[in-house]
Amino acid sequence: MKVFFETRSVEETWNVAREFAKDLKAGDVVCLEGDLGAGKTTFTQGLAAALGVKGRVTSPTFCIVQEHRGERFMVHMDLYRLKDEADVEAIGWNDYLARGAILVVEWPDRAGSLLPAAARRVRINSKGEEFRTIAIDSRADNLI
Image (cartoon, rainbow, N blue to C red; front, side, top):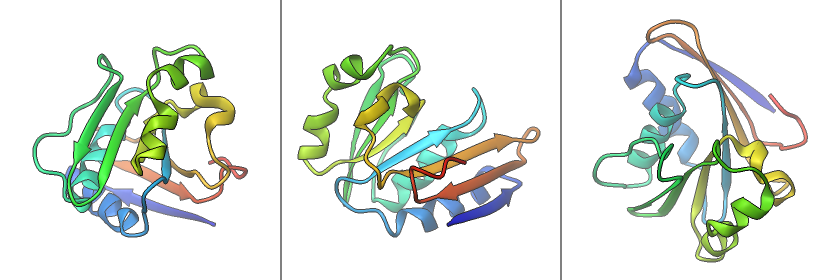
């Protein structure tokens, strides 16, 4: 099932993410899709707040992986600079899942067959400075 939202501010995007986070559990994978600057990290900030993460959440573009501990363990990954599944495995994909992390993954196509069938997909499109459309689909076989 797809659900669509329109947001007109960072706070509204965070609110959508907070609602989405209510159903997340250990071992879930959230695939964030959208162009550069679409708002994937902004959405992740809202997720982190809902998961009880304290402190600043920034884009992992250059470090690739950021661990965030709160009430639940969240790992934010940006796979943009990786080539394939082997690279993704090398950064600890399976280890994080075994440890019960919620994986929030930007550029998830790099993970290939590592993505579980139950991965949640979130497609974010920027329509201007603050205006975004957010489409959420809980089934990996029904891409947004």
